[in-house]
Length: 187
Ligand SMILES: Nc1nc2c(ncn2[C@@H]2O[C@H](COP(=O)(O)OP(=O)(O)OP(=O)(O)O)[C@@H](O)[C@H]2O)c(=O)[nH]1
Ligand SMILES: [Zn+2]
Image 1 (cartoon, protein in one colour):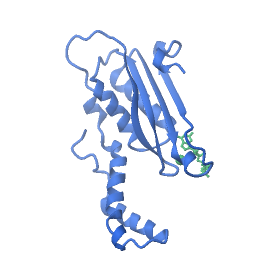
Image 2 (image 1 turned 45 degrees about the vertical axis):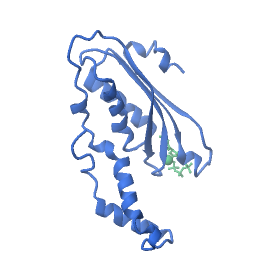
Image 3 (image 1 turned 45 degrees about the horizontal axis):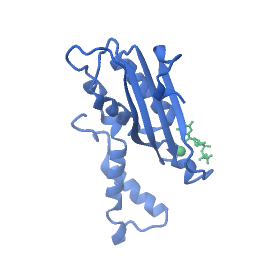
């Protein structure tokens, strides 16, 4: 991660906006129980959008040594993200993997960081999957790759159609895995 993952965030402006929102909702932001809320909410959003500050080029360096090009698949990495339409959470699991190619093999934790770099932004599920797939292709230059997100969107459960717990699956595959996906990517 970069030293300053929240460098893009203006805390003062965020806190002022939360105060204004509370007022707009008929609340008194100066009431004792709400006095610290704008700062807490600003902190929450800075964490929630920390992905904009993650530099994947620094993370996705190949491991040294002579590793055989064995397929690597991480199954069901938990993630939380934020729907850009309603600022509502969507959360679920990402299964991502690759068959090492020109970019070699990276550490397992780096694949989790790829998921976090795009989950911790304002998103739609399809774009998040696409961005993870592009990062795998750019940095790993793999012989084959796969990304599958399975998530539940609170903007569908808590408002609007009020239909909770609908899993949404997004699958992107490349190289020989497109025609013949490994088991974790099969529906
Ligand atoms: N494809 C896609 N749609 C999403 C995602 N997250 C939220 N949406 C949808 O984006 C749409 C936004 O639709 P709008 O009509 O602009 O907003 P809305 O009036 O609040 O829509 P309703 O949710 O139907 O009340 C909704 O249908 C959401 O369910 C996502 O990750 N991918
Ligand atoms: Zn939404």
